[in-house]
Length: 272
Image (cartoon, rainbow, N blue to C red):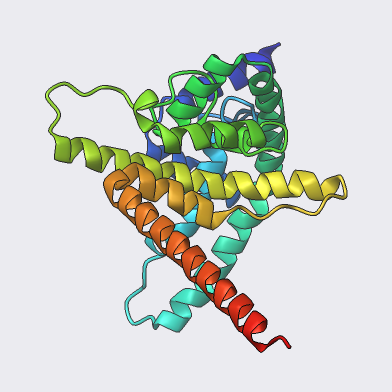
């Protein structure tokens, strides 16, 4: 019981830390350092808990990217020598990521089951908030949300909402008071770009699900999507182009009929 209380207190202490302080604590633990405020056993249990594992994984990834800030060049040290010191630092942090990734995957699996059980409107609202990168106010971190939405269980459902988002973005974007037309158009373009980016991830998830069932993944109809996008952005121009193409086709049919009549006349004239 005492150990559980210590772990809960450590979870609370670490949760209250800012980004930089938490990342430093994670790096110190990953490199084997000890903290006088908690034993390594208590730290281990806290960092890998469902409450902190996603944040711990984020911190490890960020620390790997910022490796040079943790190991700045020493006086007289060459870049190659610095790189030689950084390599084992990165390797140690990458090796430490495994257990946290497992916890995050388990959390995402459970979240995917909850998403799959939602009704259509609620699911669309949750997906819209994710695409808009709205601040996470609930207990599910964004990393877990991303894995859950992109899972084979719900990816196709999210992709269906994406198609509606592309066709009618106004249904999903919040209203902004006194917004100019230019600002509104820019917001719509940014939203559509975000939707398109997410659709790429969803497409891979859908193809993975199909492949597991022995089905050949279908490729997206890029031309049709582009045509729809053109119609949304430039309806008058698209209508004009369609009219021109129809006229060309009608003219082509008239030419074909004239050619056919000429062939028939020539055949009759040449007949004995």
